[in-house]
Length: 119
Image 1 (cartoon, rainbow, N blue to C red):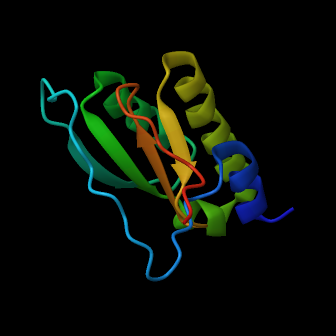
Image 2 (tube, helix red, strand yellow):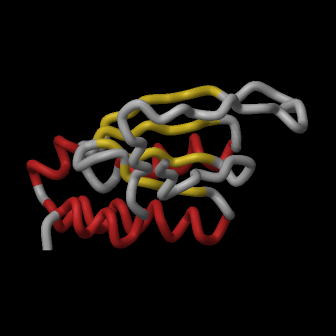
Image 3 (tube, rainbow, N blue to C red):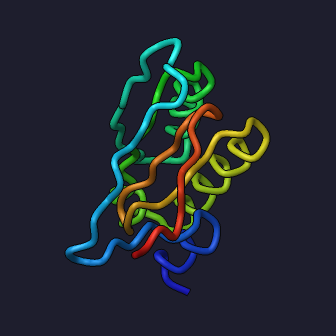
């Protein structure tokens, strides 16, 4: 099982949008009470997941995590890190998804990641 299969199994498949498809305009139904921040971080070792979880616990951050360094270094540690993040997301209502083999997105409970959107 490759890393992409592993991440897809636990995190869901990224949305595939066909070329030339029209994307509907996003309509805001309820205004946000506070602004969310987008944070990018590199996860180089398992211990970095605690730093990531500290940001996630605030509920103010959408986290884009580059896991390529950890993937290249130790796939077992990457699996532990992804499982740690996924477990936290399940417990708190946050959401997590793989963007590709090297990037993961983690969002607070106030945001839902829509998977499998194709047209």
